[in-house]
Length: 293
Length: 269
Image 1 (tube, helix red, strand yellow):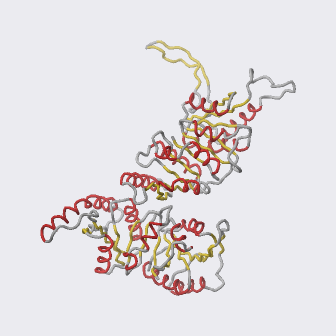
Image 2 (image 1 turned 120 degrees about the vertical axis):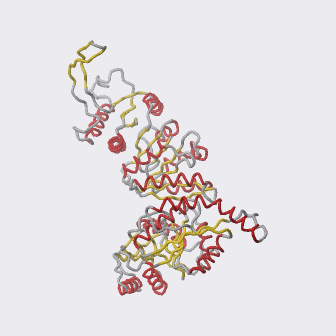
Image 3 (image 1 turned 180 degrees about the vertical axis):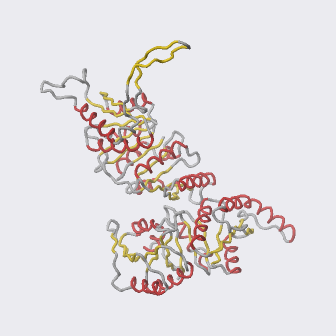
């Protein structure tokens, strides 16, 4: 798994780094910490005569330290290891002394890009082939980034991978997930698992009905998922929601749960929940939001 | 030994209900009897009499037989006393009622998944089956561990009826029991106090239970909106609830009942 963490210099970003470190500890993910700031020609040089450094470079260094502090040095998959000259057989019977770095088992990249933050974040996710973009925002108000209007919402709408918007310091009591009803992917289940483990919380799985009954295939899928979570000792609840009331359910539930919505290309939710509604959900939600793709 | 009828269809709700009922047998001296009614399609009237009808019925039963048997087979390892299901063709509610009356079951268990809208539960409570059922019912909304039970205390008379039913069903079981007194308020003011209510109902019910060797661990008054109280009660593996058949859809009690995600033991008043 590769996680792209989009950060700025505000406390919500520090909080996201902390959460992603825990997530990376469970998944051994490759991680990129990305800051988007003003354009620079040489990052090593001061931005002005007063000697002021690039505002994000220091923040990114602190985030890297905080991220790595989450791991015991000896066990950290991101810890750089020894480099030595070693003979390596490059062809049958031909040995060459190479400078071998027994490097980190997992990749931690710290990147600084300049330009339009939304475009740069999405471009980096594309370059990295990220599975998840994680970012924070102020809990109060409408989930904003300092100096960038509706950034989390725009990234969430524009991304082709999953997006996790973490609201600052909000205790998550329950994850309510609305998965694709008939073709639930293993990837989405695993992502939900990671969230449940990360936040040590209960799980509520939504089954969509046409007002009468669950479709037999949906019932079978939910039963299999329920058995799976029960076997993992995860407390999982089922809740039936009529497709017609899904919007009011989500806006009500977002006030007290972290919402996880499967928004894959052909997902039912992508049809019901257009871009404007996703923005509204991220803005209005009291808790974090995970859009699975 | 408590004789319990578990109604099964080939769906998720029944699968959960069966697993929950199997859990019950581990704490209560209980024998489960499974039952399924294959309903003809709306226009599928039974053709004729004699062998024609019998052939038609046996063809109908074959439809559901495989899936119901699979459902039971899956739970057999955790619930070895599960027998073969009884299956008949007919009207679901009429046949269940007839079966309960014929065999004098002590308890009826069925699955009905927790729903965002209350209509399904309201229809169920006001159904012909529930209006005439002679025994208590457990509606299994979700599969949870049966470790802690909450008894919802209302008036003293209702609560005493609930206590005697509870004691009858759970005689000899080792479970944690809490008494909950609910007071409905506007949303946003949820509070929970471990005190007795002023008119002493909680104390009286507690005394009644203690006389029958049940020692509630916690006696608590919860104040809040039905939705908030329902959320608090999710920690329980079973909520014993006194219920009048005439309950109104807009009443706080019904709202609470619909918001509880855990299984509910309904004690008819």
